[in-house]
Length: 199
Image (tube, rainbow, N blue to C red; front, side):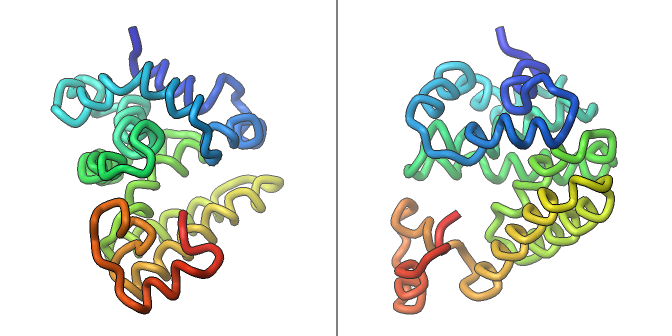
């Protein structure tokens, strides 16, 4: 039986040091691995469905629960349904959980490495206003972290900048076009032929 704590332990591990967590969990977070995707789907698909259908309302209102809901709707679908439209079908709910948590200041109760994922629904958004907010949040986060963590959190900030640049230029993420059945423009196709065009 999963709960908000098991979601967070799966995603962040059990070490209390953010730099250790960033190192040990990076393969889980950033790699494209079919076995990881299958494991997440087996364990958490029903919980992501429950989150989006409002069955986990009792998780809301505390920092751990809000973050778990965000991960269920923002991160896990990208693994479970990789390269399909379903990968993005939970994004609106993830943004709602993120914005509600920000309004209540719940993000400030979390470790910096956890706040990275709290803010990701805004970075994944195709709204420029959301992108602007994401950049501001990651900029504040990199400023707030202690000495010795700067390079890692500077990297998260730079990625937020890159995401916003794509939305500023195209109004959407071109690498999603083929997955979502959207027609790419000539400019987008040229962009996609270059390095670093997908996230």
